[in-house]
Amino acid sequence: MLTFKNALAATLLFLSPFAHAEDLNTQLTAFFAQRLAGFSDEVTVKVRTQPNLLPSCEQPSFSVSGNTSLWGNVNVLARCANEKRYLQVAVQATGNYVVAAQSIARGTILQPGSVALKRGRLDQLPPRTMLDINQAQDSVSLRDLAPGQAVQLSMLRQAWRVKAGQRVMVIANGDGFSVNGEGKALNNAAVAQNARVRMSSGQVVSGTVGSDGNILINL
Image (cartoon, rainbow, N blue to C red; front, side):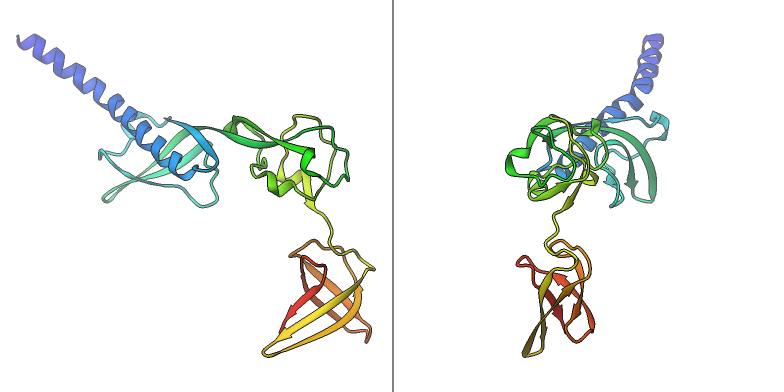
């Protein structure tokens, strides 16, 4: 009987760290599923840290740094009262991402039919793959894209709303007044970007490009 009890105790002692790791997998899956809501509806997490390095409490609090990707290999800070442990986890996330719906030549302005959404493993995609299809609308391709190719944010730029040499209207708004004037744009700029304008007086001013192409200055 003592031999059986000893063997049982040894077995439970051996299994305990692995059971704890499996419980952490479940907790971390819920943690990442909450943060990936709207991007992924299928999340699985696997803890890669050795069992003897896991936090000692049953329900630690988790956090990740703000600039950390939420899928792939991720470092997670687990806290238990005064204890801190850094965990290495592998996060698998499935969701929609943007792909080229047809061949797209460099310099092409993207239209609604130029891109489409595809479902797949987000953690297996190239860095900064586009997830929001609206970001591609009216953008300009910086390279040739093949049908089905994942679209990365670095592959596109916003279409110029103002081009260098173009005549533009400058609107300066202050406390209770507004002044308008015309000038010539000195650089290319998209909506919400900064544009420099040489006014008819020769003065150079700087403002933000509005959706209507006017240059807005707040005084």
